[in-house]
Length: 324
Ligand SMILES: NC(=O)c1ccc[n+]([C@@H]2O[C@H](COP(=O)([O-])OP(=O)(O)OC[C@H]3O[C@@H](n4cnc5c(N)ncnc54)[C@H](OP(=O)(O)O)[C@@H]3O)[C@@H](O)[C@H]2O)c1
Picture: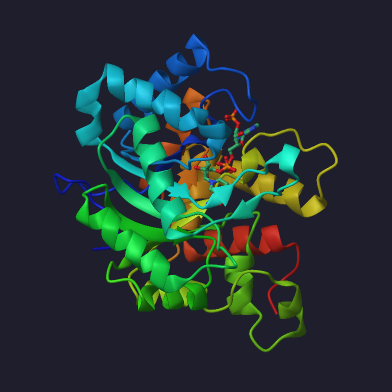
């Protein structure tokens, strides 16, 4: 098993719809009817264009992203079985009046309590995939393993995974979890190229500036852990965003993306995502656009094949300097 599958054996799509932009954004303002309509439209366009996997986190828009999605499912219960729903937990908001900062929490009680919150907001009985959002410095891998077992036994979660974790952290968690970790979601894009640089810079002084955890890409491939790329559209940097003040390498790369898109008669989004998808790790890009035309444009990526020369041209252009 590589891509997660849903209860009916339906495999996940190559692209994942990232729901962080739903629910009206990062404000404490209440949900409005227009936010629910937006969620309806986004889900419809995603499903109609072949995206069946949806990525959430309990914190997105302070829980409102899951809530509006849950409203869509409440109004159309039949949609649930067409979807693979993933969410994340483990980040706690600050409690300002008590002076408590934002922090991470992988304690068993917090994991169990968070899953109940996720299921209730999403209006579902089970999650297809649960991810630990960011490593908790105080994580006790045995306790996490126990929480996973409880969630599996209760039927509340089918598959487990992590996000923003190194190979070492995954190995530690896996040592104490009888549930196989099936996903690692990391920031990877044509703009954030640390996932490639770490391999290219072995033995070189330039490696000191790279924050991507060395060996993680290879470890996930070896262990059949599905890699997912968040920030995959680089927030539109190469697909039409205003580039005033951007660096020369960004501007040049945006032009190259445009040229390839014209040659292949596809959208610029398709080029940027196809570039990620060409890597043999079979990365699943998570797309965070709420623009319906852009969601559609992204789905053209599944039919694009870049040659090795095209792929390297984009990579080198994004680096801004030739390979060593
Ligand atoms: N695991 C993690 O720690 C983590 C962290 C962050 C995100 N995520 C997940 O990854 C998903 C995607 O991440 P992301 O949203 O940060 O990155 P993204 O997909 O690279 O970017 C999406 C954002 O870029 C904007 N955008 C895209 N194309 C544009 C263009 N041509 N011009 C102007 N704006 C453009 C979108 O606005 P429009 O909506 O207007 O198109 C949206 O705000 C999230 O939804 C979430 O599910 C996970």
